Image (cartoon, rainbow, N blue to C red; front, side):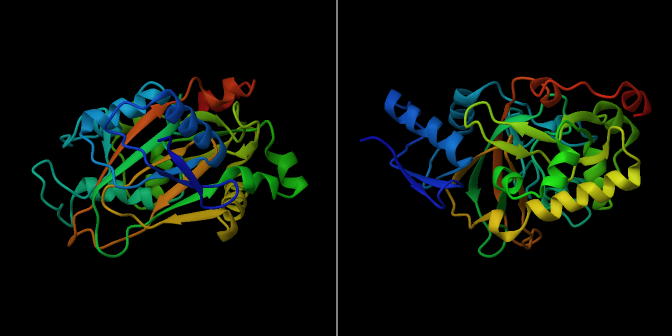
Length: 303
């Protein structure tokens, strides 16, 4: 039986039925899933039962793994395989973290709109988040369709951002939440250039490329850049562009970071465990290189 694709909307988010991701996929199933990924950008696979190794193996069908950045943070011990980003509220021994946990302060940044790993020179292509345990209330994840946002963007704004490069850094987004990165962490994760508009190689659609990690724009004063970035963010996250996912234990949701943003909604993270594990797939090259752009050398020197 070939997997079934059930769209949430005509072109954004779809549920995938009859898929057991713990087992090898047939050629027909793989073709259906890959095609749906490029069309809908967000895919929901319910009722999965996978080991961490099986989770990573499925992710590798889409490209090389982007290892967890947790290994780059001071004093943080991984709870899961380093090929998996642990975005849970659990300590290495499986207990719920404390209110003053440094990792808790860092993970709070996931409640801001972002696209994964845009603070790395080569950002993420796809993310595959597997939910092993969920809180009874709260903790949804919202996804914004950056292709639809581009289509609806006024022409004057399109002209302002087409061909421009923004600077992304994890320190920019964490500062918005009051989290202070250490000097060593900032050295390991400096600001990087990313194209502000991307052209999808498979679907052919154009999309904005934004994130709370973006803090500067090449060739613009910082105040003007901040104003433009906020205006674009406000536009791209209007409700008509957003799908909100209510998690069930056993859901695996994957999304295309090249044309979506997402954010996690709050829940009582000091009471209920939320065991969320993400495998992340690397893109093929820096976004500016894919778009045929050249970063501003003066902006590079200023970082």
